Picture 1 (cartoon, rainbow, N blue to C red):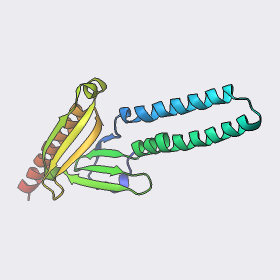
Picture 2 (cartoon, rainbow, N blue to C red; picture 1 turned 45 degrees about the horizontal axis):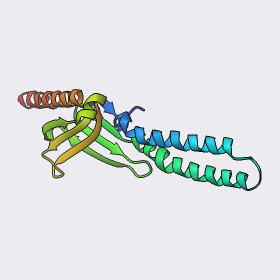
Picture 3 (cartoon, helix red, strand yellow; picture 1 turned 180 degrees about the horizontal axis):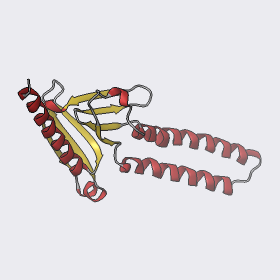
Picture 4 (spheres, helix red, strand yellow; picture 1 turned 90 degrees about the vertical axis):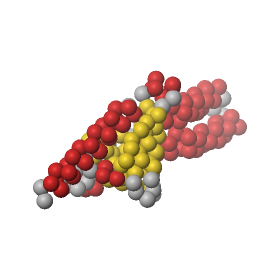
Length: 172
């Protein structure tokens, strides 16, 4: 899913566009398999007549509600969470029905660091911490894929933005 260009300035380009790491969908995926397996077993094991048929319909209804709550909502939340790094700023967008956003100009970023535990290192993800001079301060981005590479890219974007601004100031 591409990020909409209308939120970008004329000379701004998207460098990195990410969603949270796929590991955020492991638990909902297991719920999907468990519910589908249980419903499949119930459909096979219960006779399709009388009270058993009614019980099967009730189980199917509860299964669909469980899938909606424990799979579909996390899936939509995962797909509608955007971490976008451009040549001018870091854009954060999330939300399914109501949207939330935060922009951090590269010129306001003081420090970029990351952390990941052993499992996250194996899976290639982690937490990115962006220190901003803005009034909201620190931005913590969790479940970032290839977090070390993203941290390095963001650091380079901050340096390039600083150089661009210095050149523009010298030219005035």
